[in-house]
Length: 300
Image (cartoon, rainbow, N blue to C red; front, side, top):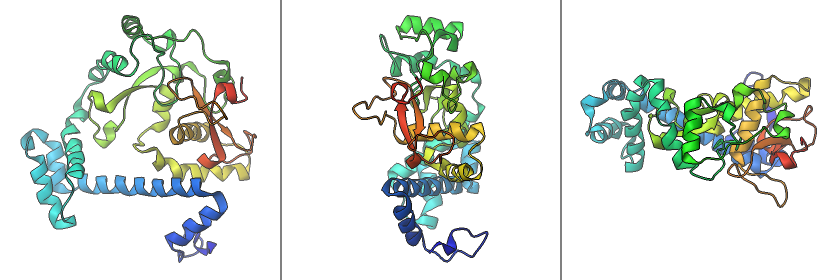
C-alpha cells in the first residue's frame, strides 16, 4: 500500500482513495478531512491562476477600465469553449479579481487610511481591540500616535501589558515587532486582492507575517507535513515551523479546546500546544496540536 508514498523513491501506483484510507487509519478523520480540504484549496488556487493567466483575462487585468461593466460577458465568452457554462457566483468571483488589478497600484497610505473604518467595524466602543486571527490584545505601544488617537476616539479598549503566557511562548514570538497592529488583505494583493473594506482586516504582525501569500490556510499543509518529520530527525526546527504551526492550528480551530473553556479570539489570545505535552519532541500537524488560550496552555 505504501509503495507509492514517494515518487522520488518508487513510481506512484497508489490511488488517491487508497492513500486516503491509509491516512484515515493512521491519523484519524480530522487528518483526512484537512488533507481533503487542502487538496481542494490547491485545486481552487490552480484554477484561479489558470484563468487569470489566460491571455485575454490578463489583458482585462492590465486595463480594467477598458472592460468596466462588461467583464462578466467577456469572461463567459472566454470560458465557455473551455469549461462550458460557469455559475454566476464563480464568474462574479473572477470579475472581482479582474477589477482589483488596480489594487496593485494602490499606495501604502491608502491602506492606512482604512484603519479608522476597520476599527469601528470590527471592534467598536467598549470592546477589547484584538487581532482577528489569534486574539492578541493590542497595547498602546503596538500603535503609532495617530492610531492611538483613533482608538481613543472609537472607545476601543487597549491592554495594559502582555500576557505572561505569551512572554513564555517559544512558538509564538513575544518580540515587540510581532505585536504591532497591521492592516491585512484577506485576499492578498499578490493574488489581486482589492484594497477596500470587505477585503481588509486588522491583525497582529505575527499573523500577517506567517500567512504571507497564503490565501487559504489549508494550502500550508504541505509545509506542515514536511516540518513534522523534522521532529523525528532531531527534535528541533526553525522558528518558521513553530510559528506556522501556531497560525495553522488557530485557523483550523479558532477557539480554546480545553474542556469547559471554548474561548474565541474575541475573548482571549490563542496559541497551540502539543497533544503529547512535549513541546520539543512533537509533530506540528494540526491533529498533533490543540488550540488553547494561555490560561489553559500550561505556559502561565
